[in-house]
Image (cartoon, rainbow, N blue to C red; front, side, top):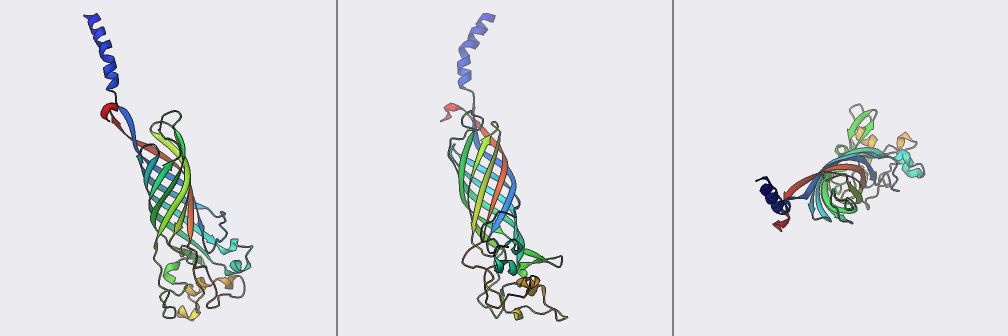
Length: 281
């Protein structure tokens, strides 16, 4: 009887092997952390000298081993100051500064250069490019006398004033076009790590609250005691570096170029797996 059982088991073993299920990598859930940087009217030479915090979460859906779609929610803190523009006398005298919190939701396509199969030797690493579209919220602010002021609500370039009917308050939301490169490496079948740099082209010139020209000081109502309002003082801060340069109509920013920002982050992802019989196809 024992011999018959052994023979029967040996006969059925290949059939059992064929019935085993294979792992299918459906997608990845990940978190990222790194640095963000701004480029615009206060940083016209694309200096990368004032990085700030960036973080995010995302879900990446795989469509085979080369293509994936990604839904991301990202946070980036950006900011800059004219005090760093020591090689440009006018910008240094302008003396403007800002910080802003950016909250972005984006949909991107990822395209792997190599076949990527987590846990498979020889297929566990690939560089990739990513391209997509996003929408983000931003809130430029600055400090004056140790107090924080929301710059958009102050209308520092005459937005909403009857003297400048063509200048409307800008929208705190804008669109972005993320474009970047990165690489990822699978530690095992369940875990990946990676690094990427993504640059965002945007549809707004007001991430830094600077775009057009200085306006007439009469746009900003005086305080009850007759002194200049925070809006006026933050519109033209050159008085802190010498004689004020904010003559109405003089260039304050460059409205012909939109602001941009970029992130460089490390991330870790958890592979989401399903199982199927190899003969199911």
